Length: 399
Ligand SMILES: Cc1ncc(COP(=O)(O)O)c(C=O)c1O
Image (tube, rainbow, N blue to C red; front, top):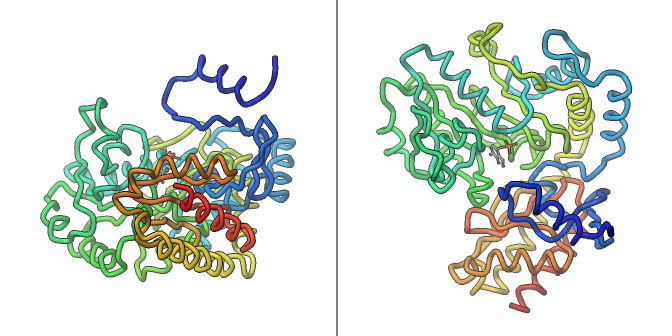
């Protein structure tokens, strides 16, 4: 039997539940920003596994850390301490506002931990979490209830109790939703899945003040924006506010599954033995990968470089929007999370544009029914950004 894309697609189609609409490629190798499929075609990966492989595919230092740890110890459960877990928690707390960490395996699980922590910390009568319309917080029942996109909840009702959503950017409605039961406000600094929609700094600062005034916890979901994506280790550093709880995942392990909820000591004190846990959370191999990943991101110049390349990509996308005003109205984002904002006419062709770029060997996606989204590995070069920009311009001129 041949081992080409078609063969893998046919075999997968028979044995997988249909949760994903996949492109006709089975990826077999990754190196830097390049992926190779089973037919030998190469792609410039400008999605990085959806903001995961920020150091590029198979970064040698991460691969080495994974192999070394896999040779020493793969799993022991959280009944015992392990070296990589402790080292990772130290790195996360040394480089953020937080004192303590809970480790999980994914973004949704990190958010579940944050939601449970906010509730247990607030006490029995206060369980309400307000999040924002258009947000995305995960696919488990609690995190899909927190997600402000009704289409993702349809068919799975009843949703767990205690979640409400404020319209994007509207402070009055947000404040009106607060009641005696409310314990926290949860938001992403930039709505990634919602279409790379940044929240105004003034708005976020006002949300932080509302939290202080009403004695609510501010939960920042930095699962997509965290770990260097916006040009600082965490996006909150650029916003003049400090959350009470922050969640990270995605890029933390550069491809190894890991997530974490971070907070201050006083809040963390509500989690005592037996309140929360995870069999695999903080797995030694995933943590070893995360330690290697964080050390590279924290090295001199890395984050400045992300900011510079982010500006370069933004300028290039703005040029494209100016050249194709009937399709695109501008560009937005921070660092290397960027969106080319489509006009109504552009939105109709959004999915098709992604397919056309795929055919040209460039991987991006269409997010929030609003933008072409770019989440390249943070190690992408300006030359590779130029290749991407040329491909977009060529694709748009062929529409
Ligand atoms: C902001 C945000 N929160 C949570 C999640 C869920 O993460 P995971 O898919 O690892 O559960 C995502 C995934 O896209 C995300 O972007």
